Image 1 (cartoon, rainbow over the protein chains, first blue to last red):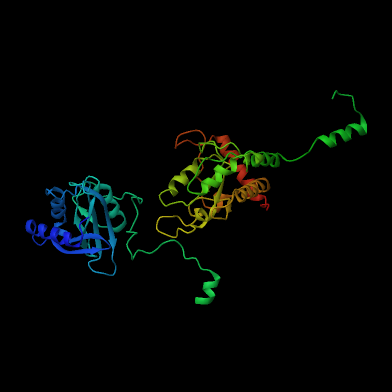
Image 2: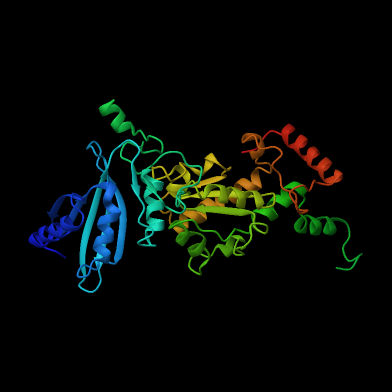
Length: 168
Length: 210
């Protein structure tokens, strides 16, 4: 795992080949993360995968987080792993609340297929170029994106007489 | 006993001691209540308590005549919903219930299948009553096997006491009967339909017993 200075060096190397693709870096709790331009995320991940000496050839996880009420709201996280050196790096792309769309990385990592479908299923993030972007876990006719923070929690309200008397 | 061995009062007493008179309906319900075939069917963690634990030697549901767990809904007449029902599983459960032959009963076991329990979220049906008729709710999270057996005994009493559950009326489900002749387009024979209508008529006239 690159440490703080290593992360800055890595960013410098990416800036040489893809200027402006990396918007920022973050190093928090010993986790190195590159915050990239969502339009160029495939370019950065391809670079990390194919450049000699980098070799992040394993996508261990792809997930989405909802940072409501921040804007841009959705963060797409790619957890990459170099299996020779056992080094991990996170690539993060922030998407707006309206029509979140990002390029698919299924051409680079076949494992991203199901993970992108799951992210679409629960957050409604559209992955452009995905071979079959349909719901994977929820029923096909489900309406809404239930893991978004503004999605109603569902179920039925349970009123206890205690809380009713006390809090009205 | 050979004919002619007893005469008069002795014969009267002999018959009184050995013969019980009852109605056919009561006899039938007695048989139904004590020979239930539960469906081998588990949904979540409650399946450890029922139907797995209650058929083991310690709890032994065989005492109540229900040890024969069937692997097919066509052979079962009791379904125990043991756990939370997700919205994706609910159509499957409903289909299993529809495939069971009449008369049939359903037990909702535990907090989750009765009310959604702790899963008040987008994925879980808030109570199995929403998509199928339930005869007995057993509270608990999970209920102990003793509680399941108590609920089962209550169900037996219900079967013996009230022959017509009337759930098709309560749930406005007339016309959803599946007849055991095969094929979705199969219809009951004229005799079966007439008998069924007659039974409905009689049941609606007779006040429901508790």
